[in-house]
Image (cartoon, rainbow over all chains, first blue to last red; front, side, top):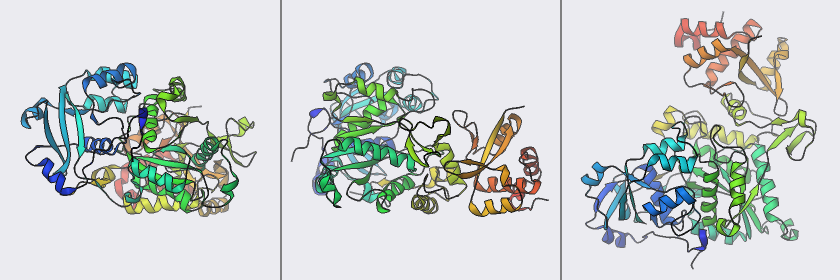
Length: 425
Length: 111
């Protein structure tokens, strides 16, 4: 069955699942090791998370993305997906335009790269056009400057599927698998909650707001019965490169799912999955990229809160909303749902919206910094703020996966196992 | 009065009872739906000293203007000193005690 992805184009699926066929295809190819970022992007391209991309971008695409926020063929696109390489590597591995090489990861075959173009592009231009700044302290800019001096463009075909380790295994679904799951659930409308966080109740209410908005005018009668929901929330956790002080990925995925398993969301309206992506912190441009990924997963709506994918003070709180509003709906493909902050009002004695409650002077805003501080102190917060079961999962994850902490520290960066491995073919 | 930058120590029920018994519960603030927090103040010099002695800590200049990511064992010791001295202004003494004793400080009882 042909599935349609971003830009109204067929969902890309470039995976050889038959091992014998894969072995035949890679026989005699020059091998070249891929970095962790390039390996994860090969996986994402091949399964169609980045549809309609069939491989790493060529110069014309990079140029169009930087200058016009679209691919060379006019499809909306906001962040260059590039394969960087040094002149030395080009020489060492004999990389030439018009040839194929076998990318390896963990010394095992990963993907065939049909190298169509070797090119260079000014990194400062990419930085400024995508991130709106050339300052190296912006983590996306730093990532761009760290790229080697040349780029390879061309198609990618995965020859060896990743093995996802526990506890991530049940949460990794390809775009096709996402769509099958939605079909099983009978969801007509699905709203994405993008996250890199352990959820507090402010996040819960963001999801509830987005769910109600996405469900809209659809009937509700059948939903009185468990299992009859016709719309749902997909919590799609971003799993990728971590920075010191981030929540560990294991805690994020398990706590988000914990909201369902502990009944804070019905099992027929809530699903947690993950997508491999190294955050670029590109704010509004990254919001567009997230929309593209979620369109490819088969979602109909996407929630955007304040400071979506931002960092520091580089972007206004609602800059992502403004950019998304300017993009014609037929180009975006997914319907954005803009949400305001949720907070605790002691006067109301409940979680409420900043756009709803008039007790301005009494509002107690959620702060990621404060919640982290509470978790470091291992003090169980009030259930109005943080669900006790979520707290228990955080602490359990810290012990099992975080070397004692739910936050990324030096030990986690050095010793934690990657979420996937590539095994011998 | 000089600006201060807090180290937030969150108080569980057990500690809250101890503080109440010692007449120190008035040192606490309420935040986030009634959670109790002991905001131990640091003047700028103390803040800089803490960040130097504990490089894993970060100063949240953007939002809360507080010192964050201090490990629990460090915050536990600050709490111990506040209770012992029955006052919040302890950070100069805390840094000095740690500098004198080094890592042995964590296992010593505060006199």
